[in-house]
Image 1 (cartoon, chains in turn green, orange):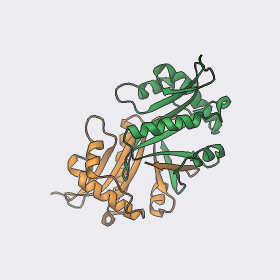
Image 2 (cartoon, each protein chain N blue to C red):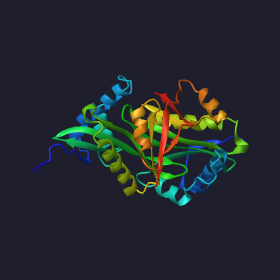
Image 3 (cartoon, rainbow over the protein chains, first blue to last red):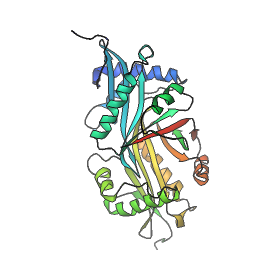
Length: 154
Length: 154
């Protein structure tokens, strides 16, 4: 008998692009920047598939619906060499606190090991208390608040 | 007549790997983590060349010697799509304050535009006053200290 309440974690396909983009917009609203998303489903198709995808994505699927996603890419550290950067984990509001974040994090961590990365890295907003607490529970995580992010938009 | 005091900015080649690695070690000493470099010239050759290089590098050459470098890679922002991440600019101690940092920064900025990036991003240590001041002088730079870097080493 099929367990309809259990989410499945899997690598995304082009059929998931629209749903993943919807989660990205949901995240932007949560992070208080609803107008910051200039990325589109079309651009995600261009950059996320083909022979040299710029990023990878895992999705959490439940009852045929995409309820969570994790996006990552390969970064390059001058000191540590090949690393994985976890860009975002997003779980739709109704499915939070059900273990999906942990499951997606573990899928990304396993991917980093498959790709022979020396570490994985990500960032969390200092006022995002649930996010900070989520990462504090993971064994061995190092927080480095002394690094200040700088951006130049074109 | 050749101007021997003028540095040239150019894309690196495999012949520059050893010199670039030496600058990386010099940076680690400056950033108070002399033992943090586990990257090697061999790994840089594997990851920086071939059909799918993980990163790119510009070097500053003066009188046949590599006196500076900038390493970057493509990052992927869920909100902004394709972005360039400037991983490090390093100028050897004797050649600082001569404009090489600015020249390397501009080479990377131009590369970001060629690659149709929507922005470029980097990070600076909050106690690195010369670094912070260097970036403050660049028009339009946004500092985002609310993002806390998190790392998990394998």
